[in-house]
Amino acid sequence: MIHRVLACVMVLCLGAAALPATAQAPRNFPADALRGALVVGSTPEITLNGQPARLAPGARIRGQNNMLALSGSLAGQRLLVHYTFDTSGQVKDVWILTPEEASKKPWPSTPQEAARWEFDAAKQTWTRK
Image (cartoon, rainbow, N blue to C red; front, top):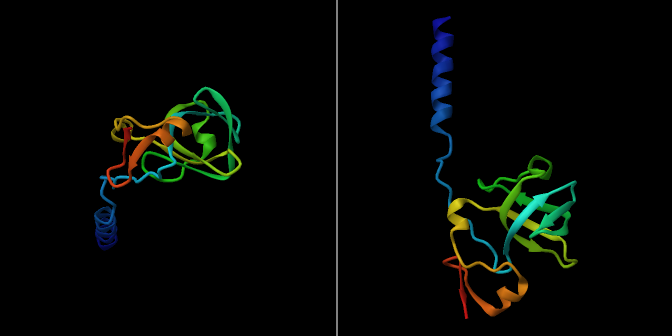
């Protein structure tokens, strides 16, 4: 009995040692990622910057931990995000921002702003021209 308890404790300790570190590597966003406020409605319907929009088939939503998030679990929440569109104008990729990512300003919220600004992919920063 004592051997089983000790074996269980050892397995738990080894498992805890193998857990990933809590620090997250910085995420790199593509140059076409825009910033906005997202509210998930009845999927695939969403509101993006107060305007009706639609998630593309196969759209991916990544949480602050960069893991995939189910749209149903986000319903009704107002989230600050970066997002991209597919070729048909539907929202393709969404990243829910961490406070550190949200603090990087300016960040374009429209394609017109992105066209006028300059993106530094290495620093993940935008500069107004």
